[in-house]
Image (tube, rainbow, N blue to C red; front, side, top):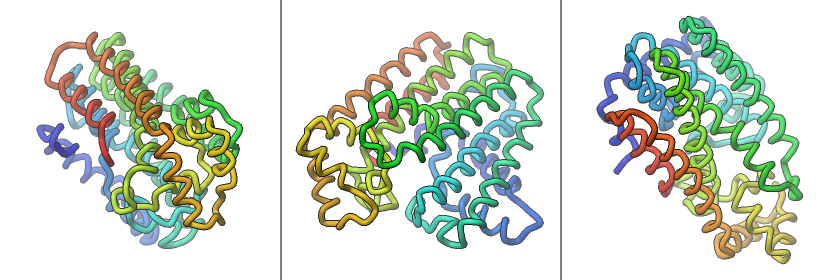
Length: 320
C-alpha cells in the first residue's frame, strides 16, 4: 500500500493545505517566490500536516482553523531542510537540485528565513497560549539540535545517547508537536493531546532510524541522493554506531571523509550492511514503534486512531 492511500479520506483537506502552502510562500520578491516554490514543488510525504489533521479528529475538527497549524509546521520543517542543505553542502533533495545548488548559499539562507517567518505568521492565528509555548520550545530544541549535529560531524567517538538525543531534536520533536498541536487546536482534552505527543515522539524516532537505515540499504534512485551520503558528510547514524563495535570495521569507517575514493565508500557500505548493524537498527526502530502503538491503546477507538496505527506501521516497515 502507498503511504497516501492510508489517509486518502483526508484528500480534500490535504489539497486545501497544499493550496495554502503556495499562498503562504507568496512574496513580492520574484526570487523568493521562485526559490520557495522550487522547494515546495519537490514534494514530500507531508507527514506533519497529516498528523496535525488526524490528531485534530480527537477534538472539534474544523479544517479552517486546523489548516493554520498544519501549514505552520510544514513550513518550519521546510525551512529547516533549506538550512540543512546549506550546512551539508547538499546538491540534491528528493532527487531534485537544492535551493543552494540551483542558486547559492545566500539565497538559500534567506529563503529558509522567509519560510520560517511565514510559519510563525500562521501560528499567530491560533489563539492558545499553551500552543505557542509548545511550538517555541520545539523551535529552540530544533535549533540546538542543528548546532549539535554540526559539532558531531565526523566525531566517531560518540555514543548511542548522543545519537538518540540528536534525532529527537532533528525529527521526532516536530512530529510529536504536530500531533499535540493538532489536538490542542481542536480543543481536545489535555490527557489526549499529551498521549498524542508521546505517540508522535515514538513514531518520529522510529521514522528517523528507518531513514538512517535506508541511507545504506536503498538505491540512489529511491533516495534521491547517493547511498551512504550521511556517512560521507560525517553524520554518524545508528547503523554506523553499531558497525563500529567491530574494531576492524571501525578502523575503515573512521577513515571516511568527503574526499574518500567512492570505491572505498562502497565497500564500507557493504561491510556495514553485512555485519548485523542494519538488523540491530531495525530492532531499535521496532521498539519505538511498539511504544507508539501502545500510546494509541489509551485513545478513543476512532477511524483516526486506526489511521494513525496504519501510518505508524507503514513508517516503521517502509522500504524507502
